[in-house]
Length: 278
Ligand code: SAM
Image (cartoon, rainbow, N blue to C red; front, top):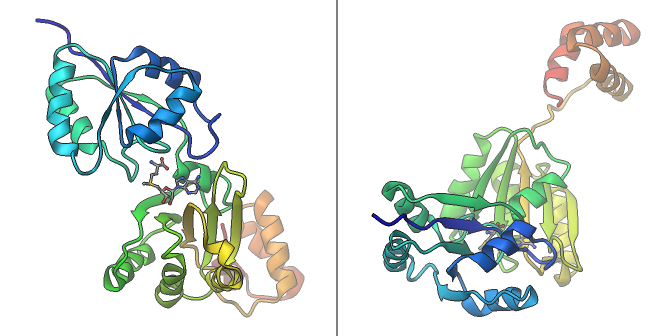
């Protein structure tokens, strides 16, 4: 029996055309067919890199039927690269049906990693990166949006969401309503493009910033929500500052004990507060 072809999942740039790997270019040149979310859009990338491989459309509306056709081509020994309009295919983009089918059929699926808005956004956000949850697009309808944000209350770490410029104000208002006005957020816009912007602050500050200039609402964006709640406390500011400093070098118990003596406070209060810090 002839050997099956391989399916390559190829990441493409999310803005800056240079954000593509050598391996991605080599792969796009070498495969028999490139399955693209939008063949015209991908055509611009391909001509930029002098890639002449033929393309075929593979998008949300034909994904299931097209997956069957592509599987038959793979079984016939053809290598296929899957690309989306931007970033990593399948990450809020088409491709699930074919990858799932390939796995079921024993056809090899090979990642060609590269740009992805989630990873680019979280890596520069200043929010917790040791634990994060990618939640996809925030739902449009009000009730679904509220339920979605309710789920964030049960998370730890950072929640990462894709959002459209048309809905960002609504969504930040919902964040304030469901999660509270002091919720720490970062909005990453136009990553790798000319007007790349990272705005950090409380949800209320972000809302003010978005409304003060309509340009602030424009562009592609990733909204990141910190689930960390810094407990409100009656402890004096200088004691908190010292605790934070000592905690970097010492076990929390020891740091709390030193600050307690220094400021005549209860060791246990400082210890408990320390637990709410990073
Ligand atoms: N597969 C893509 C990836 O790997 O990031 C995501 C595709 S999804 C259909 C498109 C969404 O990703 C946009 O609406 C936006 O939320 C986010 N996005 C894509 N490119 C971006 C960029 N350059 N800056 C900020 N967000 C971006």
